[in-house]
Image (spheres, each protein chain N blue to C red):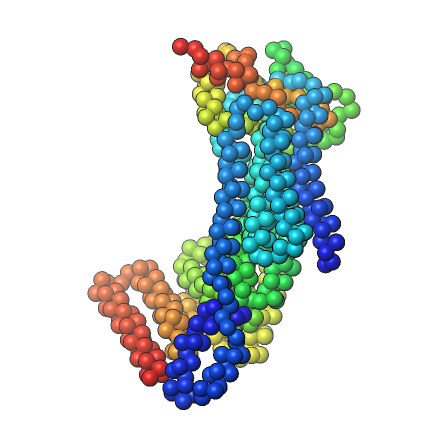
Length: 188
Length: 439
Protein backbone atom coordinates (compact mmCIF):
# COMPACT_ATOMS: atom_id res chain seq x y z
CA UNK A 1 0.00 0.00 0.00
CA UNK A 2 1.43 3.41 -0.97
CA UNK A 3 1.80 6.19 1.61
CA UNK A 4 -0.77 8.60 0.02
CA UNK A 5 -3.31 5.75 -0.13
CA UNK A 6 -2.65 4.87 3.51
CA UNK A 7 -3.09 8.53 4.51
CA UNK A 8 -6.33 8.73 2.51
CA UNK A 9 -7.65 5.54 4.13
CA UNK A 10 -6.67 6.77 7.58
CA UNK A 11 -8.54 10.06 7.05
CA UNK A 12 -11.52 8.10 5.69
CA UNK A 13 -11.51 5.83 8.76
CA UNK A 14 -11.26 8.80 11.13
CA UNK A 15 -14.23 10.41 9.32
CA UNK A 16 -16.31 7.22 9.61
CA UNK A 17 -15.37 6.81 13.28
CA UNK A 18 -16.55 10.38 13.95
CA UNK A 19 -19.48 10.06 11.54
CA UNK A 20 -21.10 7.06 13.25
CA UNK A 21 -21.62 8.71 16.68
CA UNK A 22 -22.43 12.01 14.94
CA UNK A 23 -25.18 10.46 12.80
CA UNK A 24 -26.57 8.76 15.92
CA UNK A 25 -26.73 12.20 17.55
CA UNK A 26 -28.31 13.93 14.54
CA UNK A 27 -31.06 11.34 14.08
CA UNK A 28 -32.08 11.60 17.73
CA UNK A 29 -31.90 15.41 17.80
CA UNK A 30 -34.21 15.53 14.75
CA UNK A 31 -36.75 13.29 16.49
CA UNK A 32 -36.52 15.27 19.76
CA UNK A 33 -37.05 18.52 17.84
CA UNK A 34 -39.85 17.50 15.45
CA UNK A 35 -41.39 14.35 16.95
CA UNK A 36 -44.84 14.02 18.53
CA UNK A 37 -44.86 13.69 22.33
CA UNK A 38 -46.28 10.49 23.84
CA UNK A 39 -46.43 9.42 27.45
CA UNK A 40 -45.59 5.73 28.00
CA UNK A 41 -46.58 4.37 31.38
CA UNK A 42 -43.72 2.48 32.98
CA UNK A 43 -42.31 0.69 36.01
CA UNK A 44 -38.59 1.40 36.39
CA UNK A 45 -35.98 -0.98 37.80
CA UNK A 46 -32.26 -0.27 38.22
CA UNK A 47 -29.66 -2.38 36.40
CA UNK A 48 -26.14 -1.62 35.17
CA UNK A 49 -24.22 -1.48 31.88
CA UNK A 50 -20.42 -1.80 32.00
CA UNK A 51 -19.79 0.86 29.35
CA UNK A 52 -22.73 3.21 29.64
CA UNK A 53 -23.25 3.20 33.40
CA UNK A 54 -26.39 2.85 35.45
CA UNK A 55 -29.79 3.13 33.92
CA UNK A 56 -33.40 2.76 34.85
CA UNK A 57 -34.82 -0.17 32.86
CA UNK A 58 -38.34 0.57 31.72
CA UNK A 59 -41.12 -1.97 31.90
CA UNK A 60 -43.61 -0.39 29.55
CA UNK A 61 -47.33 -1.12 29.67
CA UNK A 62 -47.57 -0.57 25.90
CA UNK A 63 -45.31 -3.59 25.30
CA UNK A 64 -48.31 -5.92 25.30
CA UNK A 65 -50.80 -5.59 22.47
CA UNK A 66 -54.23 -7.25 22.75
CA UNK A 67 -54.90 -9.84 20.03
CA UNK A 68 -57.79 -7.72 18.71
CA UNK A 69 -55.27 -5.04 17.62
CA UNK A 70 -52.91 -7.47 15.90
CA UNK A 71 -53.10 -7.96 12.12
CA UNK A 72 -51.48 -11.13 10.80
CA UNK A 73 -49.25 -13.69 12.52
CA UNK A 74 -45.69 -13.12 13.68
CA UNK A 75 -42.61 -15.14 14.52
CA UNK A 76 -40.27 -14.23 17.37
CA UNK A 77 -37.96 -11.30 16.60
CA UNK A 78 -39.95 -10.44 13.46
CA UNK A 79 -39.95 -6.67 12.73
CA UNK A 80 -43.38 -4.99 12.77
CA UNK A 81 -45.01 -1.55 12.98
CA UNK A 82 -46.94 -0.43 16.06
CA UNK A 83 -49.56 2.27 15.37
CA UNK A 84 -49.87 4.67 18.32
CA UNK A 85 -52.83 6.31 20.02
CA UNK A 86 -53.68 7.59 23.49
CA UNK A 87 -56.01 6.09 26.08
CA UNK A 88 -58.63 7.97 28.13
CA UNK A 89 -55.94 8.97 30.68
CA UNK A 90 -53.68 10.45 28.03
CA UNK A 91 -51.14 7.63 28.03
CA UNK A 92 -49.79 6.03 24.88
CA UNK A 93 -51.13 2.71 23.70
CA UNK A 94 -50.54 0.53 20.69
CA UNK A 95 -53.73 0.63 18.68
CA UNK A 96 -52.61 -1.65 15.84
CA UNK A 97 -49.75 -4.00 15.10
CA UNK A 98 -49.08 -4.70 11.45
CA UNK A 99 -46.33 -5.94 9.18
CA UNK A 100 -46.61 -2.98 6.76
CA UNK A 101 -45.73 0.61 7.54
CA UNK A 102 -48.96 2.55 8.41
CA UNK A 103 -49.80 5.29 5.93
CA UNK A 104 -51.29 7.64 8.50
CA UNK A 105 -50.67 8.47 12.14
CA UNK A 106 -47.66 7.96 14.35
CA UNK A 107 -46.05 4.56 14.59
CA UNK A 108 -42.96 2.86 15.98
CA UNK A 109 -40.71 0.21 14.43
CA UNK A 110 -40.80 -2.69 16.88
CA UNK A 111 -39.88 -6.37 17.14
CA UNK A 112 -42.28 -9.10 18.15
CA UNK A 113 -41.09 -10.69 21.36
CA UNK A 114 -43.60 -13.49 21.83
CA UNK A 115 -47.21 -14.29 21.14
CA UNK A 116 -49.89 -15.99 23.25
CA UNK A 117 -53.62 -16.47 22.82
CA UNK A 118 -54.59 -13.06 24.28
CA UNK A 119 -51.63 -10.79 23.68
CA UNK A 120 -48.61 -10.14 21.51
CA UNK A 121 -45.57 -8.85 23.37
CA UNK A 122 -43.38 -6.42 21.48
CA UNK A 123 -39.99 -4.80 22.08
CA UNK A 124 -40.37 -1.02 21.81
CA UNK A 125 -37.39 1.02 20.54
CA UNK A 126 -36.70 2.40 24.03
CA UNK A 127 -36.16 0.30 27.10
CA UNK A 128 -33.85 2.28 29.38
CA UNK A 129 -33.21 5.69 30.87
CA UNK A 130 -29.56 6.37 31.74
CA UNK A 131 -28.95 8.28 34.95
CA UNK A 132 -26.22 9.50 37.24
CA UNK A 133 -24.88 6.40 39.01
CA UNK A 134 -26.09 7.70 42.41
CA UNK A 135 -29.51 8.79 41.14
CA UNK A 136 -30.56 5.59 39.33
CA UNK A 137 -31.15 3.46 42.46
CA UNK A 138 -32.87 6.44 44.12
CA UNK A 139 -35.18 6.84 41.11
CA UNK A 140 -36.13 3.19 41.36
CA UNK A 141 -36.83 3.51 45.08
CA UNK A 142 -38.83 6.70 44.47
CA UNK A 143 -40.98 4.91 41.93
CA UNK A 144 -41.82 2.02 44.24
CA UNK A 145 -42.53 4.40 47.14
CA UNK A 146 -44.84 6.54 45.04
CA UNK A 147 -46.77 4.00 43.05
CA UNK A 148 -49.87 2.27 44.18
CA UNK A 149 -52.42 0.27 42.22
CA UNK A 150 -54.69 3.30 42.01
CA UNK A 151 -52.03 5.93 41.45
CA UNK A 152 -49.67 4.88 38.71
CA UNK A 153 -48.16 8.20 37.65
CA UNK A 154 -44.70 7.24 36.42
CA UNK A 155 -44.11 7.50 32.72
CA UNK A 156 -41.53 8.27 30.07
CA UNK A 157 -42.09 11.21 27.73
CA UNK A 158 -41.12 10.02 24.25
CA UNK A 159 -40.85 11.95 21.00
CA UNK A 160 -41.98 9.85 18.02
CA UNK A 161 -41.15 10.54 14.38
CA UNK A 162 -41.00 8.26 11.31
CA UNK A 163 -40.97 5.03 13.30
CA UNK A 164 -38.27 6.14 15.74
CA UNK A 165 -38.84 7.06 19.36
CA UNK A 166 -36.42 9.04 21.53
CA UNK A 167 -36.95 9.41 25.27
CA UNK A 168 -37.22 13.01 26.41
CA UNK A 169 -37.51 12.40 30.13
CA UNK A 170 -38.61 10.08 32.90
CA UNK A 171 -41.47 11.58 34.88
CA UNK A 172 -42.21 10.61 38.47
CA UNK A 173 -45.19 12.18 40.22
CA UNK A 174 -45.57 14.72 37.38
CA UNK A 175 -41.97 15.94 37.71
CA UNK A 176 -38.89 15.14 35.58
CA UNK A 177 -36.91 12.61 37.59
CA UNK A 178 -33.96 14.97 38.26
CA UNK A 179 -36.31 17.63 39.63
CA UNK A 180 -38.17 15.05 41.65
CA UNK A 181 -34.95 13.83 43.25
CA UNK A 182 -33.82 17.43 43.92
CA UNK A 183 -37.12 18.06 45.63
CA UNK A 184 -36.65 14.92 47.71
CA UNK A 185 -33.17 16.15 48.72
CA UNK A 186 -34.55 19.48 49.85
CA UNK A 187 -37.56 18.15 51.72
CA UNK A 188 -36.88 17.69 55.45
CA UNK B 1 14.30 -14.28 15.22
CA UNK B 2 17.42 -12.96 16.83
CA UNK B 3 16.82 -11.75 20.34
CA UNK B 4 18.62 -11.14 23.60
CA UNK B 5 17.60 -14.52 25.03
CA UNK B 6 19.14 -16.44 22.13
CA UNK B 7 22.37 -14.43 22.37
CA UNK B 8 22.58 -15.09 26.11
CA UNK B 9 22.10 -18.81 25.49
CA UNK B 10 24.80 -18.85 22.80
CA UNK B 11 27.26 -17.01 25.06
CA UNK B 12 26.63 -19.54 27.83
CA UNK B 13 27.02 -22.57 25.56
CA UNK B 14 30.11 -21.63 23.53
CA UNK B 15 32.78 -21.98 26.30
CA UNK B 16 31.51 -25.49 27.15
CA UNK B 17 31.51 -26.49 23.47
CA UNK B 18 35.10 -25.26 23.04
CA UNK B 19 36.20 -27.06 26.23
CA UNK B 20 34.63 -30.37 25.16
CA UNK B 21 36.24 -30.07 21.72
CA UNK B 22 32.99 -29.85 19.78
CA UNK B 23 34.01 -26.43 18.42
CA UNK B 24 37.36 -24.79 17.95
CA UNK B 25 37.89 -21.29 19.35
CA UNK B 26 37.92 -20.00 15.75
CA UNK B 27 34.62 -21.68 14.91
CA UNK B 28 33.08 -20.26 18.10
CA UNK B 29 34.26 -16.77 17.14
CA UNK B 30 32.84 -17.21 13.66
CA UNK B 31 29.49 -18.15 15.23
CA UNK B 32 29.63 -15.02 17.43
CA UNK B 33 30.42 -12.91 14.36
CA UNK B 34 27.64 -14.56 12.38
CA UNK B 35 24.95 -13.70 14.94
CA UNK B 36 26.45 -10.27 15.65
CA UNK B 37 26.19 -8.29 18.88
CA UNK B 38 23.04 -8.76 21.01
CA UNK B 39 20.27 -6.31 20.10
CA UNK B 40 20.83 -3.23 22.22
CA UNK B 41 18.20 -2.25 24.74
CA UNK B 42 15.64 -4.89 23.73
CA UNK B 43 14.43 -5.24 27.32
CA UNK B 44 14.23 -1.46 27.68
CA UNK B 45 12.21 -1.20 24.47
CA UNK B 46 9.80 -3.90 25.65
CA UNK B 47 9.39 -2.08 28.99
CA UNK B 48 8.64 1.20 27.18
CA UNK B 49 6.02 -0.53 24.98
CA UNK B 50 4.34 -2.17 27.99
CA UNK B 51 4.30 1.10 29.97
CA UNK B 52 2.99 3.13 27.02
CA UNK B 53 0.27 0.60 26.20
CA UNK B 54 -0.71 0.33 29.85
CA UNK B 55 -0.85 4.13 30.09
CA UNK B 56 -3.01 4.44 26.96
CA UNK B 57 -5.31 1.63 28.16
CA UNK B 58 -5.73 3.28 31.56
CA UNK B 59 -6.47 6.68 29.98
CA UNK B 60 -9.03 5.16 27.57
CA UNK B 61 -10.61 3.02 30.30
CA UNK B 62 -10.69 6.02 32.65
CA UNK B 63 -12.54 8.12 30.04
CA UNK B 64 -15.14 5.34 29.62
CA UNK B 65 -15.63 5.10 33.40
CA UNK B 66 -15.90 8.89 33.82
CA UNK B 67 -18.57 8.98 31.12
CA UNK B 68 -20.35 5.99 32.66
CA UNK B 69 -20.84 8.01 35.85
CA UNK B 70 -23.33 10.06 33.81
CA UNK B 71 -22.85 13.60 35.09
CA UNK B 72 -26.22 15.03 35.94
CA UNK B 73 -25.59 18.69 35.09
CA UNK B 74 -24.32 18.23 31.53
CA UNK B 75 -26.43 19.56 28.65
CA UNK B 76 -26.84 17.60 25.42
CA UNK B 77 -24.53 19.87 23.36
CA UNK B 78 -21.88 19.59 26.08
CA UNK B 79 -22.23 15.81 26.03
CA UNK B 80 -21.77 15.82 22.24
CA UNK B 81 -18.54 17.76 22.62
CA UNK B 82 -17.39 15.45 25.41
CA UNK B 83 -18.21 12.38 23.35
CA UNK B 84 -16.29 13.46 20.27
CA UNK B 85 -13.39 15.49 21.70
CA UNK B 86 -11.35 12.57 23.15
CA UNK B 87 -11.85 10.61 19.91
CA UNK B 88 -10.73 13.57 17.80
CA UNK B 89 -7.66 14.06 20.03
CA UNK B 90 -6.76 10.36 19.79
CA UNK B 91 -7.24 10.43 16.00
CA UNK B 92 -5.07 13.55 15.75
CA UNK B 93 -2.37 11.84 17.83
CA UNK B 94 -2.54 8.71 15.67
CA UNK B 95 -2.56 10.80 12.48
CA UNK B 96 0.43 12.84 13.64
CA UNK B 97 2.42 9.69 14.51
CA UNK B 98 1.36 8.17 11.20
CA UNK B 99 2.35 11.19 9.08
CA UNK B 100 5.61 11.69 10.96
CA UNK B 101 6.50 8.16 9.91
CA UNK B 102 6.73 7.03 13.53
CA UNK B 103 6.25 3.36 12.79
CA UNK B 104 7.85 1.99 15.97
CA UNK B 105 5.68 -0.50 17.85
CA UNK B 106 5.20 1.85 20.79
CA UNK B 107 3.58 4.54 18.58
CA UNK B 108 1.39 2.14 16.64
CA UNK B 109 0.11 0.32 19.70
CA UNK B 110 -0.42 3.44 21.82
CA UNK B 111 -2.31 5.34 19.13
CA UNK B 112 -4.29 2.21 18.15
CA UNK B 113 -5.50 1.52 21.68
CA UNK B 114 -6.27 5.22 22.34
CA UNK B 115 -8.41 5.58 19.20
CA UNK B 116 -10.18 2.30 19.89
CA UNK B 117 -11.04 3.09 23.52
CA UNK B 118 -12.06 6.72 22.90
CA UNK B 119 -14.28 5.43 20.09
CA UNK B 120 -15.94 3.06 22.58
CA UNK B 121 -16.37 5.99 24.98
CA UNK B 122 -17.93 8.16 22.24
CA UNK B 123 -20.48 5.52 21.18
CA UNK B 124 -21.27 4.76 24.84
CA UNK B 125 -21.81 8.43 25.71
CA UNK B 126 -24.10 9.02 22.72
CA UNK B 127 -26.08 5.90 23.73
CA UNK B 128 -26.30 7.21 27.28
CA UNK B 129 -27.32 10.75 26.28
CA UNK B 130 -30.19 9.63 24.04
CA UNK B 131 -31.13 6.56 26.08
CA UNK B 132 -30.56 4.42 23.01
CA UNK B 133 -31.95 0.95 23.59
CA UNK B 134 -30.14 -2.18 22.74
CA UNK B 135 -27.88 -4.53 24.43
CA UNK B 136 -24.16 -4.82 24.68
CA UNK B 137 -24.18 -6.91 21.47
CA UNK B 138 -25.07 -3.94 19.21
CA UNK B 139 -22.57 -1.75 20.99
CA UNK B 140 -19.78 -4.34 20.69
CA UNK B 141 -20.49 -4.93 17.02
CA UNK B 142 -20.36 -1.22 16.13
CA UNK B 143 -17.22 -0.67 18.20
CA UNK B 144 -15.27 -3.69 16.98
CA UNK B 145 -16.13 -3.09 13.31
CA UNK B 146 -14.94 0.51 13.56
CA UNK B 147 -11.78 -0.67 15.36
CA UNK B 148 -10.87 -3.31 12.76
CA UNK B 149 -9.44 -0.92 10.09
CA UNK B 150 -6.96 0.36 12.72
CA UNK B 151 -5.40 -3.09 12.71
CA UNK B 152 -4.63 -2.93 9.01
CA UNK B 153 -3.81 0.78 8.77
CA UNK B 154 -1.64 1.15 11.85
CA UNK B 155 -0.41 -2.44 11.91
CA UNK B 156 -1.23 -2.57 15.62
CA UNK B 157 -1.70 -5.74 17.67
CA UNK B 158 -3.87 -4.48 20.52
CA UNK B 159 -6.79 -3.36 18.33
CA UNK B 160 -6.59 -6.86 16.79
CA UNK B 161 -6.91 -8.40 20.27
CA UNK B 162 -9.79 -6.02 21.09
CA UNK B 163 -11.48 -7.07 17.85
CA UNK B 164 -11.11 -10.80 18.54
CA UNK B 165 -12.36 -10.50 22.13
CA UNK B 166 -15.12 -8.12 21.01
CA UNK B 167 -16.55 -10.43 18.33
CA UNK B 168 -16.38 -13.37 20.75
CA UNK B 169 -18.36 -11.44 23.36
CA UNK B 170 -20.75 -10.35 20.62
CA UNK B 171 -21.30 -14.01 19.63
CA UNK B 172 -22.34 -14.81 23.20
CA UNK B 173 -24.78 -11.91 23.45
CA UNK B 174 -26.17 -12.41 19.93
CA UNK B 175 -26.72 -16.12 20.51
CA UNK B 176 -28.57 -15.35 23.72
CA UNK B 177 -30.66 -12.59 22.15
CA UNK B 178 -31.45 -13.87 18.66
CA UNK B 179 -30.90 -17.60 19.03
CA UNK B 180 -27.93 -17.48 16.66
CA UNK B 181 -24.63 -15.68 15.99
CA UNK B 182 -24.56 -16.48 12.30
CA UNK B 183 -22.27 -13.55 11.46
CA UNK B 184 -19.42 -14.75 13.65
CA UNK B 185 -17.53 -16.70 10.92
CA UNK B 186 -17.70 -13.66 8.63
CA UNK B 187 -16.50 -11.32 11.39
CA UNK B 188 -13.65 -13.72 12.10
CA UNK B 189 -12.75 -13.89 8.41
CA UNK B 190 -12.23 -10.11 8.41
CA UNK B 191 -9.26 -10.36 10.80
CA UNK B 192 -7.73 -13.59 9.44
CA UNK B 193 -5.68 -11.96 6.61
CA UNK B 194 -3.91 -9.85 9.23
CA UNK B 195 -3.21 -12.82 11.51
CA UNK B 196 -1.89 -14.89 8.58
CA UNK B 197 0.29 -11.93 7.54
CA UNK B 198 1.89 -11.64 11.01
CA UNK B 199 2.42 -15.40 11.32
CA UNK B 200 4.05 -15.54 7.88
CA UNK B 201 6.33 -12.64 8.75
CA UNK B 202 7.63 -14.21 11.96
CA UNK B 203 5.59 -17.05 13.50
CA UNK B 204 7.44 -16.84 16.82
CA UNK B 205 7.31 -13.07 17.37
CA UNK B 206 5.53 -11.75 20.47
CA UNK B 207 2.87 -10.22 18.20
CA UNK B 208 2.10 -13.53 16.44
CA UNK B 209 2.13 -15.37 19.79
CA UNK B 210 -0.32 -13.02 21.55
CA UNK B 211 -2.61 -12.96 18.55
CA UNK B 212 -2.36 -16.73 18.19
CA UNK B 213 -3.32 -17.39 21.81
CA UNK B 214 -6.17 -14.88 21.66
CA UNK B 215 -7.41 -16.44 18.42
CA UNK B 216 -7.39 -20.03 19.72
CA UNK B 217 -9.09 -19.03 22.98
CA UNK B 218 -11.70 -16.85 21.25
CA UNK B 219 -12.42 -19.48 18.62
CA UNK B 220 -12.79 -22.19 21.25
CA UNK B 221 -15.17 -20.05 23.32
CA UNK B 222 -17.15 -18.61 20.38
CA UNK B 223 -17.77 -22.05 18.86
CA UNK B 224 -19.19 -23.24 22.17
CA UNK B 225 -21.38 -20.16 22.46
CA UNK B 226 -22.80 -20.21 18.98
CA UNK B 227 -23.23 -23.90 18.17
CA UNK B 228 -26.07 -26.35 18.61
CA UNK B 229 -29.11 -24.92 16.94
CA UNK B 230 -31.09 -28.12 16.85
CA UNK B 231 -28.82 -31.20 16.88
CA UNK B 232 -27.70 -32.07 20.42
CA UNK B 233 -24.09 -33.18 20.83
CA UNK B 234 -22.86 -31.63 17.57
CA UNK B 235 -20.21 -29.85 19.65
CA UNK B 236 -18.50 -33.21 20.31
CA UNK B 237 -17.47 -33.57 16.67
CA UNK B 238 -16.86 -29.84 16.14
CA UNK B 239 -14.46 -29.60 19.08
CA UNK B 240 -12.86 -32.93 18.13
CA UNK B 241 -12.06 -31.56 14.65
CA UNK B 242 -11.07 -28.13 16.01
CA UNK B 243 -8.49 -29.45 18.49
CA UNK B 244 -7.15 -31.92 15.93
CA UNK B 245 -6.71 -29.05 13.47
CA UNK B 246 -5.02 -26.89 16.15
CA UNK B 247 -2.61 -29.65 17.19
CA UNK B 248 -1.63 -30.72 13.69
CA UNK B 249 -1.37 -27.14 12.39
CA UNK B 250 0.94 -26.38 15.32
CA UNK B 251 3.03 -29.50 14.65
CA UNK B 252 3.19 -28.75 10.96
CA UNK B 253 3.73 -24.98 10.73
CA UNK B 254 5.26 -24.19 14.10
CA UNK B 255 7.36 -27.26 14.82
CA UNK B 256 10.51 -25.13 15.31
CA UNK B 257 8.87 -23.01 18.02
CA UNK B 258 11.42 -22.20 20.73
CA UNK B 259 8.87 -22.94 23.48
CA UNK B 260 5.33 -24.27 23.93
CA UNK B 261 4.18 -20.67 24.63
CA UNK B 262 5.36 -19.65 21.15
CA UNK B 263 3.25 -22.39 19.56
CA UNK B 264 -0.29 -21.39 20.61
CA UNK B 265 -2.05 -23.65 18.11
CA UNK B 266 -0.06 -26.75 19.00
CA UNK B 267 -0.22 -26.15 22.76
CA UNK B 268 -3.92 -25.30 22.84
CA UNK B 269 -4.64 -28.29 20.58
CA UNK B 270 -2.75 -30.71 22.86
CA UNK B 271 -4.43 -29.36 26.01
CA UNK B 272 -7.84 -29.41 24.33
CA UNK B 273 -7.35 -32.96 23.02
CA UNK B 274 -6.43 -34.35 26.45
CA UNK B 275 -9.24 -32.43 28.19
CA UNK B 276 -11.82 -33.51 25.61
CA UNK B 277 -10.69 -37.16 25.61
CA UNK B 278 -10.90 -37.19 29.42
CA UNK B 279 -14.38 -35.67 29.32
CA UNK B 280 -15.55 -38.35 26.90
CA UNK B 281 -14.50 -41.11 29.29
CA UNK B 282 -17.49 -39.98 31.39
CA UNK B 283 -21.01 -41.06 30.62
CA UNK B 284 -22.55 -37.58 30.94
CA UNK B 285 -20.63 -36.38 27.85
CA UNK B 286 -22.69 -38.76 25.72
CA UNK B 287 -26.11 -38.28 27.31
CA UNK B 288 -29.06 -37.40 25.04
CA UNK B 289 -27.05 -36.76 21.88
CA UNK B 290 -27.99 -37.41 18.28
CA UNK B 291 -30.82 -37.05 15.86
CA UNK B 292 -33.36 -38.70 18.16
CA UNK B 293 -33.23 -35.61 20.38
CA UNK B 294 -33.84 -32.83 17.80
CA UNK B 295 -34.57 -29.57 19.56
CA UNK B 296 -37.62 -27.47 18.76
CA UNK B 297 -38.97 -24.01 19.52
CA UNK B 298 -37.29 -20.93 20.89
CA UNK B 299 -34.31 -20.42 21.26
CA UNK B 300 -33.37 -23.25 18.87
CA UNK B 301 -33.25 -21.67 15.44
CA UNK B 302 -33.70 -24.34 12.79
CA UNK B 303 -33.28 -21.67 10.07
CA UNK B 304 -29.62 -21.16 11.00
CA UNK B 305 -28.76 -24.81 11.69
CA UNK B 306 -27.07 -25.00 8.28
CA UNK B 307 -24.30 -22.86 9.74
CA UNK B 308 -23.51 -25.56 12.31
CA UNK B 309 -23.23 -28.17 9.58
CA UNK B 310 -21.08 -25.86 7.44
CA UNK B 311 -18.72 -25.23 10.37
CA UNK B 312 -18.50 -28.96 11.07
CA UNK B 313 -17.86 -29.77 7.42
CA UNK B 314 -15.19 -27.07 7.15
CA UNK B 315 -13.40 -28.16 10.32
CA UNK B 316 -13.65 -31.86 9.43
CA UNK B 317 -12.19 -31.16 5.97
CA UNK B 318 -9.35 -29.13 7.49
CA UNK B 319 -8.65 -31.80 10.10
CA UNK B 320 -8.74 -34.59 7.47
CA UNK B 321 -6.29 -32.72 5.22
CA UNK B 322 -3.89 -32.22 8.12
CA UNK B 323 -4.25 -35.87 9.19
CA UNK B 324 -3.37 -37.07 5.67
CA UNK B 325 -0.37 -34.75 5.68
CA UNK B 326 0.69 -36.01 9.13
CA UNK B 327 0.42 -39.63 8.00
CA UNK B 328 2.54 -38.88 4.94
CA UNK B 329 5.21 -37.38 7.23
CA UNK B 330 5.03 -40.51 9.44
CA UNK B 331 4.68 -38.32 12.50
CA UNK B 332 3.48 -40.97 14.98
CA UNK B 333 2.69 -38.62 17.84
CA UNK B 334 0.84 -36.32 15.42
CA UNK B 335 -1.18 -39.27 14.10
CA UNK B 336 -2.11 -40.23 17.68
CA UNK B 337 -3.35 -36.70 18.39
CA UNK B 338 -5.05 -36.56 14.98
CA UNK B 339 -7.09 -39.65 15.86
CA UNK B 340 -9.28 -37.42 18.06
CA UNK B 341 -11.34 -36.09 15.13
CA UNK B 342 -12.35 -39.48 13.59
CA UNK B 343 -12.87 -40.93 17.08
CA UNK B 344 -15.31 -38.19 18.08
CA UNK B 345 -17.27 -38.80 14.86
CA UNK B 346 -17.35 -42.58 15.48
CA UNK B 347 -18.15 -42.03 19.18
CA UNK B 348 -20.97 -39.64 18.30
CA UNK B 349 -22.48 -42.06 15.77
CA UNK B 350 -22.36 -44.86 18.36
CA UNK B 351 -23.86 -42.72 21.14
CA UNK B 352 -26.57 -41.44 18.81
CA UNK B 353 -27.42 -45.10 18.03
CA UNK B 354 -27.81 -45.69 21.77
CA UNK B 355 -24.57 -47.65 22.25
CA UNK B 356 -22.64 -44.98 24.15
CA UNK B 357 -20.97 -47.72 26.22
CA UNK B 358 -18.69 -48.42 23.25
CA UNK B 359 -17.92 -44.68 22.91
CA UNK B 360 -16.85 -44.63 26.55
CA UNK B 361 -14.56 -47.63 26.06
CA UNK B 362 -13.16 -46.07 22.90
CA UNK B 363 -12.13 -42.90 24.69
CA UNK B 364 -10.73 -44.72 27.72
CA UNK B 365 -8.52 -46.67 25.33
CA UNK B 366 -7.65 -43.50 23.38
CA UNK B 367 -6.59 -41.57 26.47
CA UNK B 368 -4.43 -44.54 27.52
CA UNK B 369 -2.75 -44.68 24.10
CA UNK B 370 -2.34 -40.88 24.11
CA UNK B 371 -0.70 -40.90 27.54
CA UNK B 372 1.70 -43.69 26.53
CA UNK B 373 2.51 -41.98 23.21
CA UNK B 374 3.28 -38.62 24.90
CA UNK B 375 5.41 -40.29 27.61
CA UNK B 376 7.33 -42.38 25.05
CA UNK B 377 7.93 -39.32 22.89
CA UNK B 378 9.22 -37.41 25.92
CA UNK B 379 11.58 -40.24 26.92
CA UNK B 380 12.86 -40.59 23.37
CA UNK B 381 13.54 -36.87 22.97
CA UNK B 382 14.77 -36.52 26.58
CA UNK B 383 12.24 -33.79 27.45
CA UNK B 384 11.21 -34.04 31.09
CA UNK B 385 8.25 -31.69 30.63
CA UNK B 386 6.77 -33.89 27.88
CA UNK B 387 7.30 -37.06 29.96
CA UNK B 388 5.49 -35.41 32.87
CA UNK B 389 2.69 -34.32 30.53
CA UNK B 390 2.27 -37.91 29.35
CA UNK B 391 2.33 -39.27 32.89
CA UNK B 392 -0.15 -36.61 33.93
CA UNK B 393 -2.49 -37.74 31.13
CA UNK B 394 -2.22 -41.35 32.29
CA UNK B 395 -2.70 -40.32 35.92
CA UNK B 396 -5.78 -38.27 35.00
CA UNK B 397 -7.30 -41.35 33.35
CA UNK B 398 -6.47 -43.63 36.28
CA UNK B 399 -7.66 -41.13 38.91
CA UNK B 400 -10.86 -40.46 36.94
CA UNK B 401 -11.63 -44.16 36.73
CA UNK B 402 -10.88 -44.67 40.39
CA UNK B 403 -13.31 -41.97 41.44
CA UNK B 404 -15.75 -43.28 38.87
CA UNK B 405 -15.81 -46.91 39.95
CA UNK B 406 -16.35 -48.54 43.28
CA UNK B 407 -12.81 -49.58 44.20
CA UNK B 408 -11.70 -50.05 47.81
CA UNK B 409 -9.53 -47.47 49.56
CA UNK B 410 -6.64 -49.98 49.69
CA UNK B 411 -6.65 -50.51 45.93
CA UNK B 412 -6.91 -46.74 45.30
CA UNK B 413 -4.11 -46.07 47.79
CA UNK B 414 -1.79 -48.58 46.11
CA UNK B 415 -2.61 -47.18 42.65
CA UNK B 416 -1.81 -43.63 43.79
CA UNK B 417 1.53 -44.75 45.32
CA UNK B 418 2.43 -46.59 42.10
CA UNK B 419 1.66 -43.50 40.00
CA UNK B 420 3.78 -41.38 42.36
CA UNK B 421 6.71 -43.82 42.11
CA UNK B 422 6.48 -43.84 38.30
CA UNK B 423 6.51 -40.02 38.27
CA UNK B 424 9.54 -39.78 40.56
CA UNK B 425 11.47 -42.57 38.82
CA UNK B 426 10.88 -41.11 35.37
CA UNK B 427 12.03 -37.68 36.50
CA UNK B 428 15.12 -39.02 38.29
CA UNK B 429 16.09 -41.14 35.27
CA UNK B 430 15.67 -38.21 32.88
CA UNK B 431 17.54 -35.83 35.18
CA UNK B 432 20.45 -38.30 35.42
CA UNK B 433 20.43 -38.80 31.68
CA UNK B 434 20.50 -35.04 31.15
CA UNK B 435 23.42 -34.67 33.61
CA UNK B 436 25.22 -37.56 31.91
CA UNK B 437 24.74 -35.85 28.55
CA UNK B 438 26.02 -32.54 29.86
CA UNK B 439 29.13 -34.10 31.51
